[in-house]
Amino acid sequence: MKAQLLATLENSKQYTLNVAGKMPERGYSFKPVETVWSFGELLHHIAYGIQWWQENYIIGNEIAWAPPAAVVKKKELHSYLEQAYDELKTTVDSSKLTEDAVKGFHATLDHITHHRGQAVTYLRCQGIEPPEYGY
Image (cartoon, rainbow, N blue to C red; front, side, top):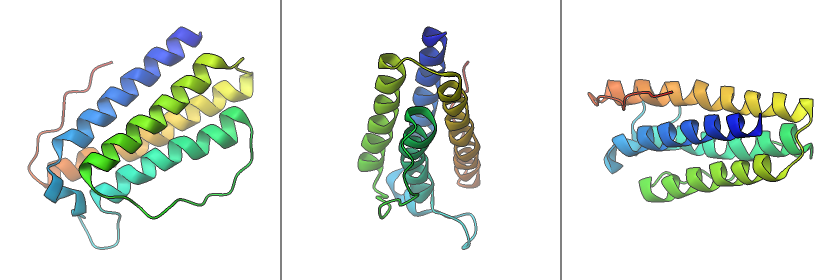
C-alpha cells in the first residue's frame, strides 16, 4: 500500500509543478477576479496546506492554521512546493501509517487537487494551455 501512496504522491507533485511551471512569472500576480487569491498566492496555499494537513492529519500533531506571508515569485514557489511534497514523501515513506494517517493522506491529496484545479482555470483565463494530466 505504501508504494501505491508514494506513486500517487509523485504523480500529484509532478502535475502540480507542471501547472506551476506553465504560468509565466508575470502571471503569478494574476487574479481572475479581485476577491480571490492570485495564482502565486494559490500555489503558496497549496504548499502550506500540504505541510499543515501532514502535521494535523498524518503525523497527528495538532497545530493551528497560521500560514506565513505568501511568497509569490515563481522560483521560490516552485522550491516551496517541492519542499512540501518532499517532506510529505519522507513522512509517508518512513512512518508506520495508521488508518487515520492514510485517511489524512487522502484528504491532503483532495485539498491539493481542489486548489490545483483552480490553478488550471487561472491558466486558461490567461490563454495558456494547461499541461496534460497523466495518471
